[in-house]
Length: 279
Image 1 (spheres, helix red, strand yellow):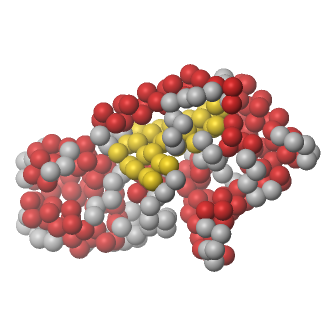
Image 2 (cartoon, helix red, strand yellow):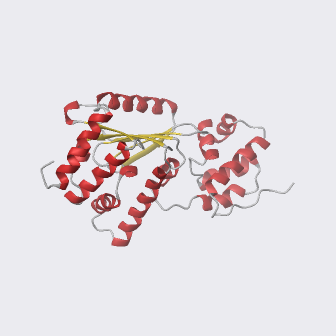
Image 3 (tube, rainbow, N blue to C red):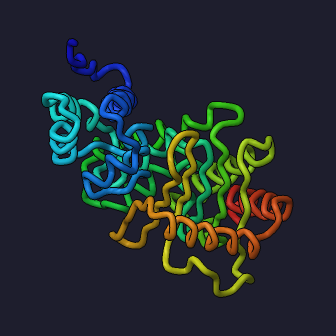
């Protein structure tokens, strides 16, 4: 029987690579858990590779070729699936985000990427690296805008964002940039495309004071959680960690303003920025 053909990099290579992994595993009569045990990873990790929510690294591709007898197929083709337009530290998260059916996110210091405008994203990217060439800033900003196109679909994915009041009051770029950014969020929330709540200063201490977190759910793979601090980022599929951080998110929702009060605050701050008042 002929072996699998190499992947065409122009046709969703990661999804095709995941589908081929599933077929190769099933030909061997292995469950995801059984294959994971042979490779010293979890069954859910194998499931995420098959669903295209995890990137296949070259060393892991080599091990798969050995265990599944695929004649170097995964080693050859994981390079095509590894191409990305995102910064290295975030590319796996962004690509998982594109596969998610639901995203729940909390950000303490800035507006989350999926809710940003181009001007706000550009200001944040410039602050991230003041010495970067202008073409690098534009490349990063375009990557952010491509992620935002997820919201072009009228209902999918579900996006639920808890924004810290500090993120709304911290001026990024200029007052005009902030006015546009907050009007944009208010517009998305007002037409029920996203769920937005504000965690007010009056909430005091809370469960996520150490950093941001993003929970992602998928139709055919285990959930993932991404959390970060300054220069410290981590993507996890461990069920206990995901459950623990889902509780953290639920606690934030409980402390946040209602959707109606949150929208009223966002709109008021947008007007303040637009009219040069102190927000």
